[in-house]
Amino acid sequence: MENLYSVKNPKIDLKKQENELLRLRDAIDILPNGLFFWDENNKLIATNKSAIDHLKEFGFDLRLGVDRFDHVNHLVDHNYNVLQSGLDKKTHIKRMKESWNNFTGQRTRETKFSNGLSFLFTDTRLSDGSTISLWSDITKIRQVADSQKQLIDAINHFSRVKKTKRKTVEHLKEFYIEESMSKYLNLLKELIV
Image (cartoon, rainbow, N blue to C red; front, side):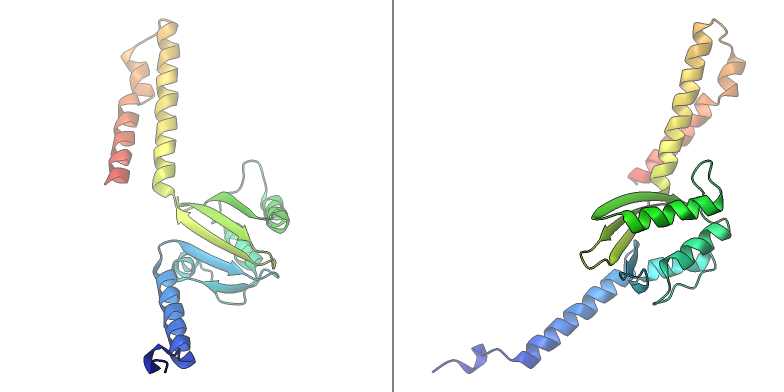
């Protein structure tokens, strides 16, 4: 005779699966990373609190069913996105749409915002044509990289000045090597802590 307790109960299994899905939903909602899930027609079918809150800061009400390019147009039209160098708004949006519509598999892209934030997006196109986009805030990493570049530029300039035998304290102060180094070290400390 089979043990009664070892027989699977479909109602218990279904309830367990439902509880696990609710737990997953709650976990996704509290992630600091933003999530967008677009259907094959670029309509939003899922998102999380980080994405909603981020776009709310820019005056956009992110809700299920919205078209992906509604929020893209809003961000560009209101100067919240930093445009690609040398592009006007119309061309920027056109290139974004072409890139979005033509990519397959997975890609990463960086977006800079006028408030100083930088996000790294990972977009994954699924076999049914839907797309999951996740973003991470890389602002501090970008600040360190920019500070490094400023420091390297200052050192290179000072090196050129030194080679031409025009080294003076004024040139050193002009390019803020000490200040750049201090700023760079402080940013590195922030990232480590």
